[in-house]
Length: 347
Image 1 (tube, helix red, strand yellow):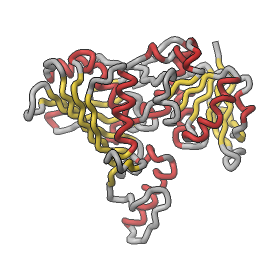
Image 2 (cartoon, rainbow, N blue to C red):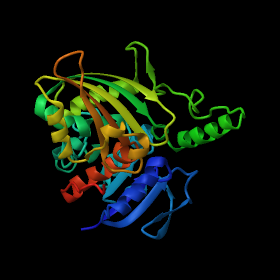
Image 3 (tube, one colour):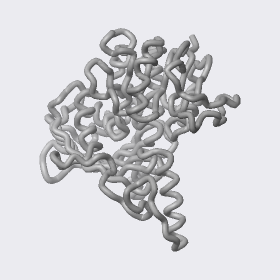
């Protein structure tokens, strides 16, 4: 069984990662069609040793395709959704466009794999699977198995989010502005709203003044409730952009409904799919962004008892934003929907 696959936004940070993930996981691709804006059309990219030319995205691009992996922003996803599904092509969308839409599965394959096939079976899914926000994915891979064991009552999250979450241009800006800073040269930010080198700032997603949160912080609560199928956990977050290239870190303070020891939490996570316990306490060594960069698994460590209140643990979680936070999760959704399996991670 092989599939004709289209990648929308093929020249972007997540788009190029789609190509690498498909190749590395040996996804059964019969034909790969690379799509982007008119400006990027004609770009050459390689897949499995073959040089492919990026084509301009049009409504006709999905004819004959079985799967389309989208990462070109919400506006593009909304504009081309109908053309994609009308062509009988499964759409796995990395934007926020359809995540909270009724009937559209929002999937983290290690957490709710049964939802992926609904995009094919149920008319309500309309041929779309939504890829969750990167912070939500990275957190839930670790938290969902603990929730099944002891029930999460409340989650307080502080996130340390990499440049890749704002796209390839933000990654370049971090490198260029850091070089300028070290050389004592002025640098005018073009992508981010403030200087990025040697700085961090509360997240640059839209600020919702009436709620006192930025949009990114609310996504964690809303998306987690939908993915878990449980709206009872109380969730709050503070999201911060930090000068790291591609891996997000999260400090998670989790209150449980039932007692959960540190030892039992470690026992559960050591056997949970997509999770790797990564630490060496004797050396004061815990997961860092450089450890997670380029890895499929979400790293967890420094699990400890919160001494300020009962039934509460603190966890430190790190994951590659471009992989598990985006491209890998989307390809895993496609594997579940089209192949009926969740393949193991390479690491």
